[in-house]
Image (cartoon, rainbow, N blue to C red; front, side, top):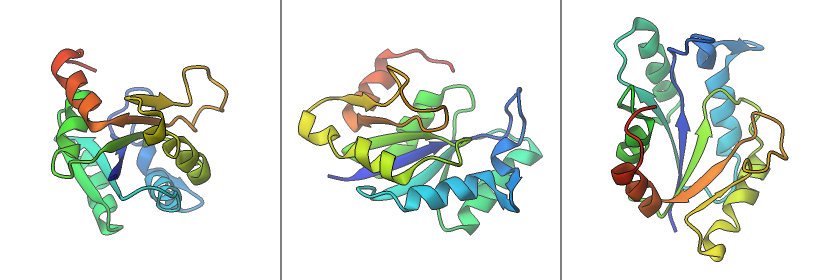
Length: 159
């Protein structure tokens, strides 16, 4: 089984612009998150999916992520589902894990604990947020690549 973690991140948030690049103790938030995710078990590949926005600030994010050795996919600015699908396509994973890029305290053990029961349960989607039992910032969603593909062709077309 190939498991791809896709970190959803962008710089053009209207509520808190540039937050994923803001430093925490001198280290950009996205860097802290990627480091923590790299410690999680059962992950084969991590990439950051961002938008194709032409804003100058939006070019900082991909450049920094690539400098850390992680892959970046730049896709649709308005259709996040399509961005996720297109980012996953070259990897053809069995399992996709969605993490939001503004959660630097994501727990690598929790991520692994959510991935572990996914395949044996033979489900298309598993998360820890349908009944919110974890604090904000620890949300983890796991789904099959085929569910992502189905959602892309039948789901909503905007963010």
